[in-house]
Length: 136
Image (tube, rainbow, N blue to C red; front, side, top):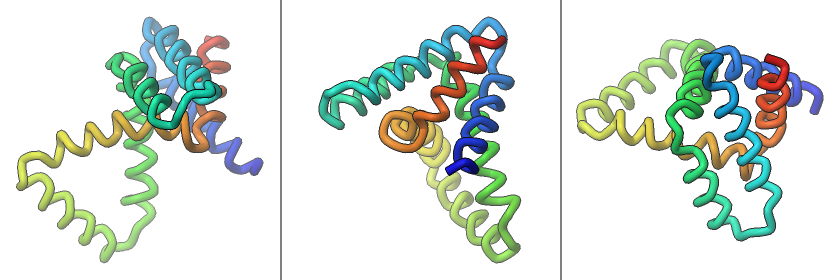
């Protein structure tokens, strides 16, 4: 449990560092909105809709997705062997050649991150973001 909290703190700090100083308030408000949605007594579908609508601001999502992409790259690419890299390269190539791959991947990240915060273990991440933006 302690390791997960340390990882959430590390990722939260990376998000705050990746955020431009004039966008820190927007990031803090987004994280607070995610925690408010998470703790609300509405249905899961209502929470999902609210999280996605609250995450439409590009200023907020850009640093979050940047850090999420770096973590995904580290876990999914850097720490993998040659056979796994070749398989992933083939999959990315197939998606890219289909023409819709980049848009689908971007949409997946833009939807996945807020839903992770609301429904998954991202509550700690949102708390770290709020704490770190207040410190700056």
